[in-house]
Image 1 (tube, rainbow, N blue to C red):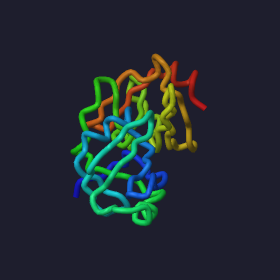
Image 2 (image 1 turned 135 degrees about the vertical axis):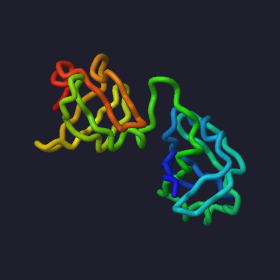
Image 3 (image 1 turned 45 degrees about the vertical axis):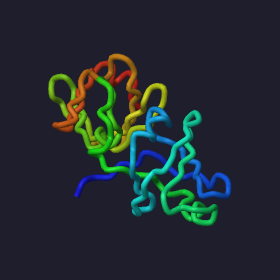
Amino acid sequence: MEQKISIGAVLKPQGIRGEIKVKVFLDSAEDLKNFRRVFVGGEEFQIMSVRAQGEFAYVVLRGIADRNAAELLRGKDIEVYHGELPEPPDGRYYIADLTGCEVVTANGEAIGTVVSVTPAKTDVYTLETPKGEVSFAAAEGVIESVDVENKRITVNKKRFKEVSV
């Protein structure tokens, strides 16, 4: 079965007609308009309309007709199948694709495995290593290459040591 990826979270009902306010995890709330269906709490819904406003979107889902029905969705993730995501621009990756990648130096020395990525101006990667967790900022010059297909990220050893904690 294809993996589902979280693209947002329901924050609260908006108004009395079943609209929900969503915190969008994509680059832009406008990107939510590219999807026809989503899964909320494991249940499939068709998207009827999307109004984007900053990092939030106001969404109407088929079958959610009033505030009470919308309230039941509060706090639930909004997911789509990984295959339905648009291709990211060159040099950009989905966090789900980076999680589980082996991190190695340019000469092949294994450092650890990516367990999470915290989005920020400079993303912070957390690795599981034999010595415990290590975090590093993806600052300029740290990551040399990313091979999502082979689940491998190559880093510059010197720069990695400068920014890791």
